[in-house]
Image 1 (tube, rainbow, N blue to C red):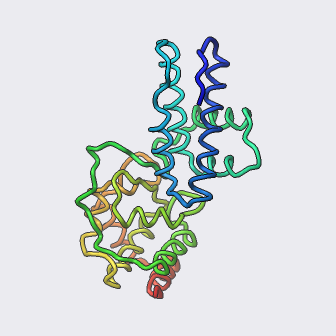
Image 2: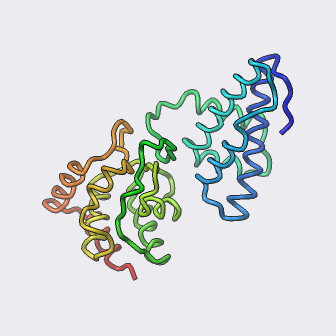
Length: 246
């Protein structure tokens, strides 16, 4: 992308628009057309646009700020990004709408995020599972049917990433009892190993509904006990749906 020296605030927003427009093209080409994982697209795009060919301090600082904003928008608001990028055109107004959302959102932890912090490694964690595509589709369907997570739509790649214990993956829980029942039922079918609660805590994969903390093994155990003592129709439905996986 050609760089023009930044001289006014409007140049900053034009730079933001140009970068998001470029991200849209990369998204349509790599994710929509070629099936690339969304989080891989984000990381690759940010890494390939991190530096500019300019020695001017103001320009470099502004570009660093723009990159930070773009990364935040792409990482923290992927559902809105997908919706905007899927339209026939992407305008400066669309860009500024995403910027306003980024500026004014009160969400402390995104429903989905990919944290590249090397200290948050989950490389040694494993559920020791090997789900078929049909089984994974059933898990995704269950998650969406009973609104287990705080996202409009759980995607196949999201659950694949969670069960692969991929480093830095986060998903916000909508109902911890129902999520605990899902994992407990998978354990009952010998689909995952017994220490799933500890794995979820150590990997910090689950974020509480209020977005303020990571879900612990203790809270999962408490939630599961409560679900067993007072099972609801949803609890029965989740167990039935997962019990019917191929």
